[in-house]
Length: 261
Image (cartoon, rainbow, N blue to C red; front, side, top):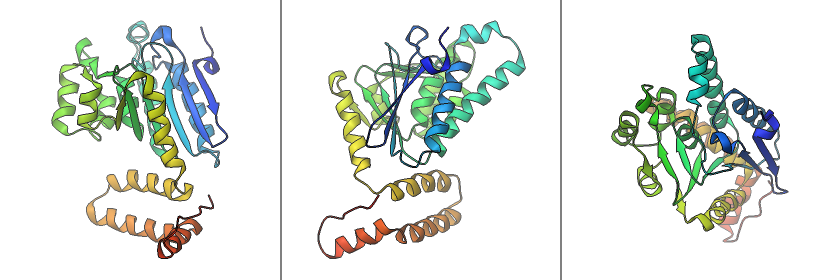
């Protein structure tokens, strides 16, 4: 059995791009307890490192992620085990949302159940034309309850419900149309498509990106009045940042801004 470090490859570029690669291809990168522990450790490290700008979540093998391993789950028919596993997975998903930098899913193959949840939970997603997506637990008597949380926050409710109630696969083009992914590229162009998104984010001020991501997730759960209040406070604080002042001055002077961060 692989240890946690081997289950997840971590690479860091000089620009501050961290690439986390699921590395359990024989099990289709299943989200068992060891894999989730490795992911949590890596996400915690990113959260504590102010020099990180973007995270790319990728995977080895034929599949991106097949979700939880039903063989493991059937071998441990205990309520406490299931509660612990799903709580551990939910903590990883919440860590992605709470991470101060954008997380981009690079989806090259199948993403099912909690694997589809992982794609939906990432801030952005780029998929190969060969990728496919399903919340297939219903086919085995298990409604994908936790995957439904980010799914219904990404897709129109009718499309999300169809995936959840049928377990049917959708292809990359449908995922793009329904809002599950941002961009679709041919397999040989997938890395270039991901990098284009990364570079676009890196070209923006780090403070604005961090504040913006936090604001989006916070205001989405609020009522309209509270959302506008929080958004206004965030913009005012953002305008006090040196890069925002530089951006406003550059606009007035009709030149390109020179970011400090």
